[in-house]
Image 1: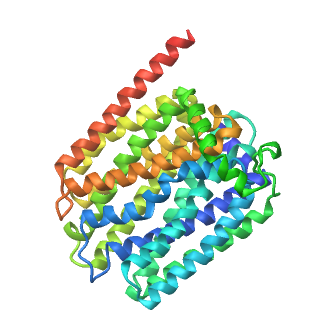
Image 2 (image 1 turned 180 degrees about the horizontal axis):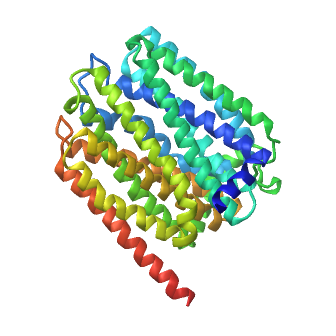
Image 3 (image 1 turned 30 degrees about the horizontal axis):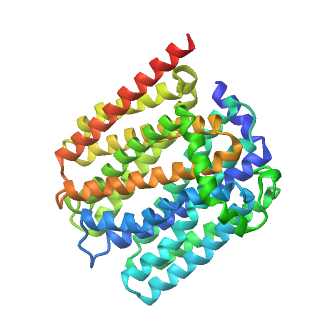
Amino acid sequence: MPAVRDLRVLLKLRDFRSLLAARLLSQAADGVFQVALATFVVFSPEKQSSPAAIASAMAILLLPYSLLGPFTGVLLDRWRRRQVLLRGNLLRTFLAAATAALILIGVPDWLFYASALSVTAVNRFVLAGISAALPRVVTGEEQLVVANSLSPTAGTLAATAGGGLAFAVRLIGPQADALVVLLSAALYLCSSLTALRMAPDLLGPDPSLLQGRLKEALLSTARGLHDGLRHLVQRRVPARALIAMTVVRFCYGALTVMVLMLCRYAWSATESEGLALLGITVGVSGAGFFAAALITPWAIARLTPFGWIACCAAAGAVLVPALGLPFTPGPMLAAAFVLGLSTQGTKIATDTVVQYTVDDAYRGRVFAVYDVLFNVAFVGAAAVSALMLPPDGKSVELVVVVAGLYAATFAGMLRLGAAQRHSSD
């Protein structure tokens, strides 16, 4: 298969392997850390969690720094991205270890959230930097499509594996929370050390675009943000891909909160049983991510990126209500697989569109905007879910709304594909 051949070629590239390893270790640590947060908020025996509590936690952890994401992009287009990976993960190692110490001490919730917020804040730099750097370690559009299938999807699978490991450690007992967070700190350290295998200037941006002093970069942030947004607006293709990805991410976030509540209350009698069910659901969704990595290069080659996004949205529009409305574990697990495949397939296609249609000098800023949309959509979905979900998580209305959004995305992508074909004639 051509995709398998290109994958073998990619894995022979030392710099690609190094960047991929840094991503896998970093996102595995993210998965461990995120499960630690989820179990603290949702599955602690002393807590009576609600959709509003989950939405509040997501807003605290994601929204403030997501709104600062464009400023991250301006710095990514001036700082050496390899150094961002190295120092960013070193900083997260220290902050995660501090969070573990706070858990052992038994501090109030707000202080725990403040420490966790510091860890997730650095994530804005690391993941946006990896995405912006990917074209620097591959050559050609075909290789970039395969790299976008392998790298983000493998990262998501690493996060899923890290989450599974954290679930296993967490089942030891509630006192294992600090150990789980320390595990994430160790993985962040390994990711940082992996970045040392790459030359400092390898990942760009070009030396002529670097500003040596932080003060100069910060002073130009407003102007740089304006230029980056204008660059994106002038290129409708990546802009529309980002809109589609935002809607699909919103749908995924809304259903994630619903499944959290179903696992916590409707499908289990105890916290440990609900935690085990959630772990299975996450694993099944991860299998969908893996399937997307295998299918997407083939699908994009035959359908174009927008055609593949339309297919992913159509699958969600049809199968989410069919599988979700019974509100039983079996069909919902099948829906988790479909959502994993469609969401990751959409992301791979969007990554490819943005990377190949945005100039390198602006790519960090655009990916930072991408990061903002990605997280704000998830937080917004949690807020909407908090208004619509009953305590047990069973909401027909939410499933219908999500299916409608998938259908609207499908229709929009079909119109865009038709317009592109007409303009090329």
